[in-house]
Image (cartoon, rainbow, N blue to C red; front, side, top):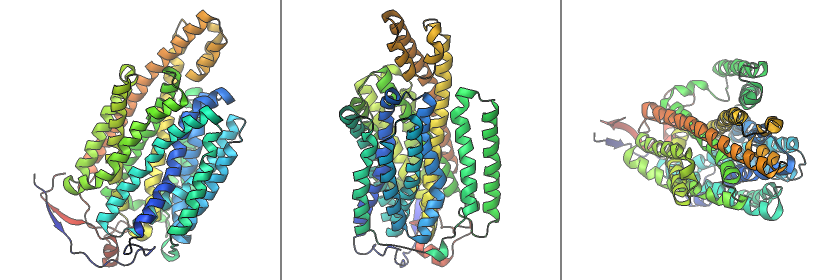
Length: 546
């Protein structure tokens, strides 16, 4: 069917908070914001490459490796809403600079860790800094670009350029580990944070809107109390059982606190997150889609880096290089996505992107494809392109659904869904993988009975145990570990593919193809003043296909 679009007459927009949208300075601000986001991207991917080295140096278990990833992500996700609200109320530039200083200092602390517990604790502290960095970048961007077309393209650039961190992380991590040890993957954050701090102070003006930015300490506390037991139960379930008392208790506590959070946000006069806004399909469908998509991205990256180093026996540097096609696809797809949306609509573009991601996930489960340099490169490039084409329009759907003065909380919702989806992805896919690995290697007759208990923990511990055995037994255990890993990988990526297909279904069924009239944060139609600030590109669609 043919789309017939009527564009609204453009109203004069009031000045953005940072008052830069008319002098060209907004593009310099965008460059600084992208560099700030790269700090987060580099840290997330650089750690994945370092995990096998940390296993050997600190004798970390599979569960501890997951907590090194998730301790940061849990704290990060839990504090995002609060950090976004604080940035709106007390100044976004100040919140950004605080996050950079804290993140750099805690990264230096992580480099001094001598036990897995110290790494986990330092990573959790780094999550505090990250929570102040990520949402402020997107909220500053939204208020800087008040024109909807420019804003959409700026978000596409932000999504694409921020993916450079995904490419630099593995490459820099592999180089640093081979020449300086795993501690260097944390120390590298210090100069990056220092540079971005100076640039942020130079280029980003302050902005404060205290009267429109309420604080909600109880809501923040309830959101934290809901997420922590949920992720703890998922991560620990393979070791203690899905029906073990601590696992069931974790899920029960999470359910109770999520319900309390929802009720409190409905009744609070000035909620941090007015949950009634989820009645807006553009906001809720986009949030659900981004959550499920990042579930697949984080979980698959976690497993692929282990596959490259433990099964294919690549060096950290080569393993990092193998992940660069994903970043290249993200960098290429992000900036192009807004132009595709202008022509085809959000729904078609997002569905096409998720179709590419699901096809790539199917190929991820094949050892013959992923062990081939050419085929594996093509699959990872397809995965990155699909992610890039998906993330930018979904992010614009979330940010475009909110009034600009609530951009900090809107950005926090976007980032919370990303990080919560990522944390749950690592936890769920990691748990499914671990449970399958435990069962498979424990049932193989080639694994010596004396070392079966130690070898079943993870492929890293299996290979460590193999080093202490005789040649014949060592070869048998290595072969068994590889077989168990590949068997577990196939099951895990099948689950990941199902999650991506679920995201595709949500986007196709519920995500509007075009932006309609804006709504205010309480879920009601916006006032004329809010609509003028918001300036949607399209206010009506005739004969538009879903």
